[in-house]
Length: 130
Picture (cartoon, rainbow, N blue to C red):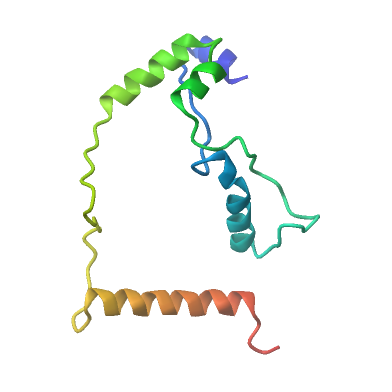
C-alpha cells in the first residue's frame, strides 16, 4: 500500500484524514448535499456511496489514537503545521479582488451572476420543451 511505497521511495509519511464535513453528526447533511449536486435522492438504490461518516474533522486525540502505530506520521504532520501560518481577523469579511463591470455595484453584479447561474442549472435539470 501507500506505506510500502513511501518506504521504498524513502518519503516521509503524514497523518491525514479525508475531511468532508466538520462533525461526525454532519454526515447525513453532507450526503444530502451530494445528492442535490448529483440530482439524486438519499434513498436511490443506484446512488453511489463515496463517503463515510468517518470523514469528519477529527480532534487531536482522535488522530493520536488513529495513528498510534505511526508516530513518525504524527510528528511529520506537526512539522508541516508549524510551517503554516494564518492569521484570521474575526468579524471581518474578506472577499477576493474581483473585477466588477462598469455600471454595476458589487451587489448588483453578483446578484445578476447568481440568477444567471441558477437559470442555467435549472435548464439542465428541467427540460423546457417538456
